Length: 99
Length: 119
Image (tube, rainbow over all chains, first blue to last red; front, side, top):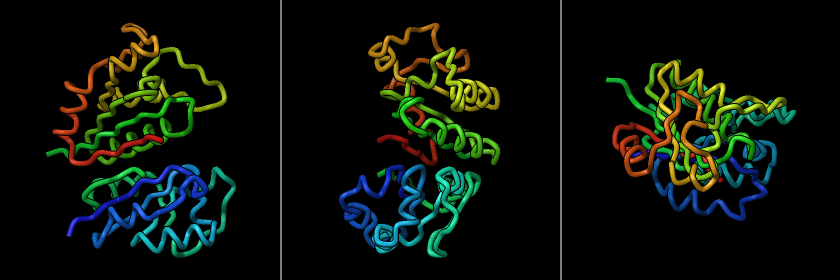
């Protein structure tokens, strides 16, 4: 089974639907890294759950989370640094897709 | 054999933080021993302009220059440069004005992974 790592940069309020993630990901192993304003997915209960419903794992860039004054995060999301992001991109997933 | 990451950036240095993500990803991947290529397309070509002086923001050009000295390869699209009035000789010395057909295609062929930073 192959795996896909989605890269999200935009705020959850810029997405009308996450259906395309589910459609592209299908039954494959899927992860998401949230960069920049996409980290707001991790603090919006409804938007965050929509994302968790279509991805197996959701990673949040610690730098971007902290830069927005955010501190509290659900255990369903994983705060990571750039070293871990590189591991995910290069070793743990077969391809990346920016959405 | 060294594994290779190509970062394809299409956002301008002053548009958002995409160029800073590019720098941080390239630095982290280089620190872990990966070969890194960066290709700038569209507004992404602004990253190679020499003389950037953003004052209150990270200096992408300076960071790229430092990364290039650690082995990161920076190439941008010539047509996109021409469209924005960026001429040869105005790029930072460690970057190259190249092309989609010659450079991006080669990067894609030799890379193990590719990350696109675009809006």
